[in-house]
Image (tube, rainbow, N blue to C red; front, side):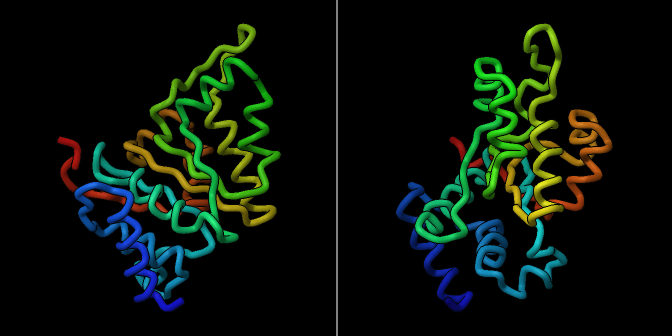
Length: 189
């Protein structure tokens, strides 16, 4: 499919899914990524990496990923969605099984919504765990070994990622993600 056809398809799907849809740059960037357009690399990004889309609250990051998830539902590029807050809740009930599900045992692309907004130090049997850091370290290893990508959205900046997940993870995130910043006012009224 030509990139121009893909732009139209994305916009049509977004209009179906989002009341009062307003097209922003993130739709163009994600369209270029998912259509494997050379325009994406001309922006300085890498098609072999995953996506970390950061920006202020309400700027449409999650909605954009939902549009692409629906668009790719029946393709081999479909991705699973996981709320970081829900993962923490699941971890407190199920333990390491949750780490493995999204981390080392995962064989497909996962999109993590609201990375960094979850409770960071979770207690399990008296031990503290930074659950998302553990999952991201596993996903980094999977990325290096098998090329499986990870997508995420966040309201954090680079410095805050280092504070929450540590410099070691922040450094690995540079290698596994294209950092894409979304600017603008909140769409929520």
